[in-house]
Image 1 (cartoon, rainbow, N blue to C red):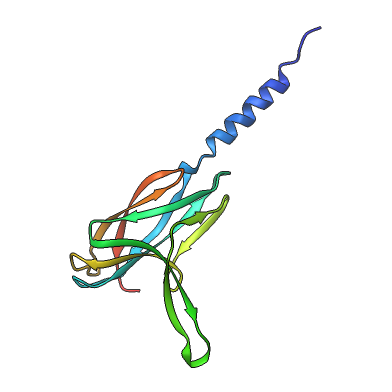
Image 2 (image 1 turned 90 degrees about the vertical axis):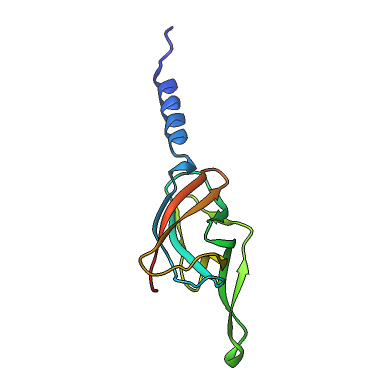
Length: 146
């Protein structure tokens, strides 16, 4: 009796499709940053789309424009007149499968502390994002007014 190769072909195709859906397919778009003065702070915003079937995590961000670069989440705390915006440092940011995570004012952002150069509208800089699975991804960030 002859074996049918169809199940093996289907299994190989399935493995190929899964392996082609790796986290290295992260798409980062709409990158922009706030202006800032030397010694001051700034922030960068963007969207990270994960079209793959593998979860990833943003572990850190780096740029040579500031003494420190951190991942932050802004959120309101307190009640009534005592409400204030607080920034909470994030050790990492999960990037779920088949999902988009948006870094935006009033939410997630990359925080630049103690700028070593002024950032004016029209300037740009390189931001390196390090992911658990996708590794390092560099992007150009354009400085503009919010």
